[in-house]
Amino acid sequence: MAGFVGVLKDSLRIFLENPLLVVPKLVVAFLYSFAIVFVVKFMVDFFTSTDIAFRPIAASDYAALALALFVLVVDLAALVLDTIVNLMLPLLVVQLRDRKALDFRAAFRAVSSDLWKSFVPIGLVLAVFAALTSAWALVYVLLFGYVPDAGEPEILFLFGPWLLIALAVAFMFYMLFPVSAIERLPVGGSLRRAFTLSVSNWRGVSKALAVSVFLSGLSFAIALALNFISEEHSLVFWAAFIIVRFLTAYIATYMYVLSPVFYLDCVKGAKASGAMA
Image (cartoon, rainbow, N blue to C red; front, side, top):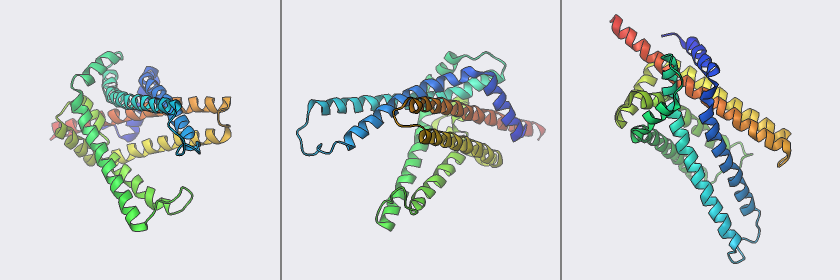
């Protein structure tokens, strides 16, 4: 194995030398941005309408409902496309490691040829995560009898376990996307393989996960800072919004480049150890 520093250098080199890798994530970011803008508008219009419960349903209400359904479809389409892109990136990294030219069509064909084998393991992991977080929310409400406001210190007892659950699930299945995309195993095989690789390489996975958490936190901090310095609906606000979406796409792309580079290094190291044995 090249060591974690070597993995970071290799992933950063691939990312910087191939700026086209960011293009699919930029498309996804545009779709998410479209959904975010209209969801916020819909929620503001809905919750600021004081007489909504006391007047008959108007034509504008049906229009708002139609818009909400359309945005939901766009959001779901963005989620599916985002998952496909996340599965394509490991294949694109393999192309570059084999000194081939980037071939987005080949990567897309490979992912879409047997999509359910890749989607089902990811969906199961997300379902487990949703079940665990929902269970804790229910336990919290039963113990404390209420949901705390954002400014109350008790909110840490609600979000703290959620964060720990998210980190635990991310750690156990850190290798899931490269395993699903590259090895093309059955559903159960992908889950077992990803879990085994993550646990057997726990030191490196912990470091890679720490890098991902740091980059996500950095992106969130910058987004928060830009939101504070810009007035809502001003030119600066929309400029900041676009900058944050671009930044999110770049950071997400690098995280999904780091993961397969680390995976390939682990597999290479395992093969070398087996050959020596």
